[in-house]
Length: 111
Length: 116
Image (cartoon, each protein chain N blue to C red):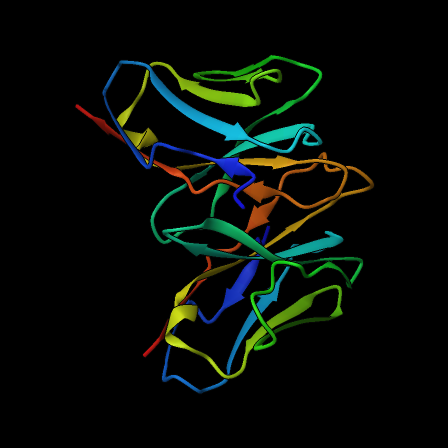
């Protein structure tokens, strides 16, 4: 049973445009959400996070939005750059220390 | 500063053989996690330790998998006997946590396992 779902396995966006990556979760006990970025042959690296007491967190070109009623979060990247091409994982945690990850979305930013 | 160190980076073995993956977490971190990445399931949590004690091993697929953390600077994930369906990239991650999760995970570069 996948508690964190990323229904789009891939996304292709033109450089300079906005990239929107989506994530849904099923466990209402989750209260902390993170996005990780992964390049080939490397481990995932932390990108941005949001607590359930907020609905938006912004860090430079990256913004995460949280809709608790819909159990949905999204990552916006604007403007998108070729270096953003990677696999993006959504992750969530609740009252334990473990992070549950989604299946990932492969983003390709083309010139 | 050294990050999470995993070895081997690549392992090719034959079905039935024992496989041992190793991890050295970041010094000072008190939580260690083993994940497996596959196309179908993404990053699956296999087991995690807090202060060297296994807290949750519900993700370990079956008895063929075992993990140990004999001290704060070393952990192993063992598969015995290995099967072709175990082929995946195995990641180790560590973090500094206290109570609820507030710190991010730091991942190693992964161990790519191929079982023929």
